[in-house]
Image (cartoon, rainbow, N blue to C red):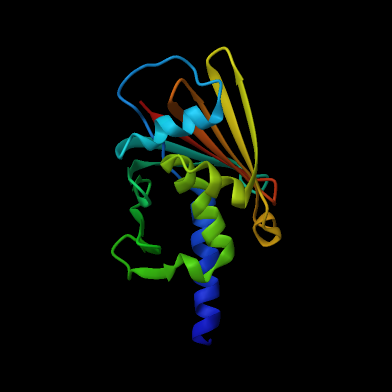
Length: 201
């Protein structure tokens, strides 16, 4: 197998694993505030949180699975684009995004690395999370069609990929929250599978 083919397979592996389990993190503020009826104000509140760490519970539903897959672990986000996800149960797994490079390791296995900028689909996918957490509306709008709904202090941010290649894997990212706290993130895959990450505040 050529080096190029191996890198393409690794890119798809990381993209799938991100959508199955990782993908994101909640920017959590320390204070309870009123709901954010305006998306730009909401993103601005996220941008003020330079460091966040939180436990998560993820589940993936699929027509191919009898029972949902569940993962437990913790996530860390540091302004502007450092993201770390550690899965602790039911197995050990580690994802790190740093300086535009994704590093993946399962258990004690070999670390695998990809430069995000070399893979447009993976790059757009990563931007879907880091731009929200960093409060970067312009960068988010460049890569996604945005829908934002707000009612009774709860909000829903839906992101639809502009890149055709990405839509072959992921059709929508959905952030749910209240005030300036992200409660859940859902990843809708083109296959019809749905991954849900709930943050344990």
